[in-house]
Length: 102
Image (cartoon, rainbow, N blue to C red; front, side, top):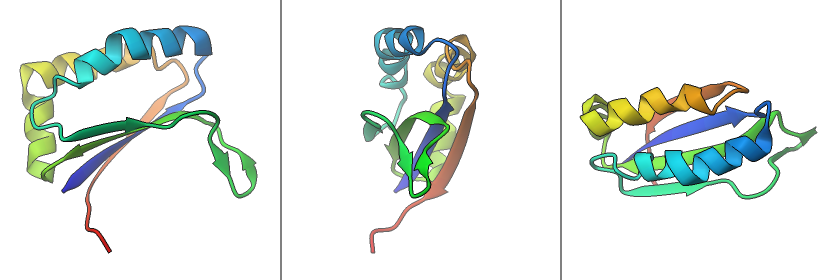
């Protein structure tokens, strides 16, 4: 398995982010070919030292790194990637990696 972890920093307008993310971005991302699971953080994000600068964390699970690459090379992937700057006003970081259960 492989995961794409998307770290969204606090947006300039959290209410607008929430509405757009739920109404527009999630439906786009759910069309990614090969997507096995899509989870998002719920509520405030904390760290051992206190509040986090992150607003939302999304984890998209695929069968492999190749499947992530194929998903984002697809027409649906291009639309989904192009959508991110429309609402992620606080900035975003994306990390891809293979996973193993321990």
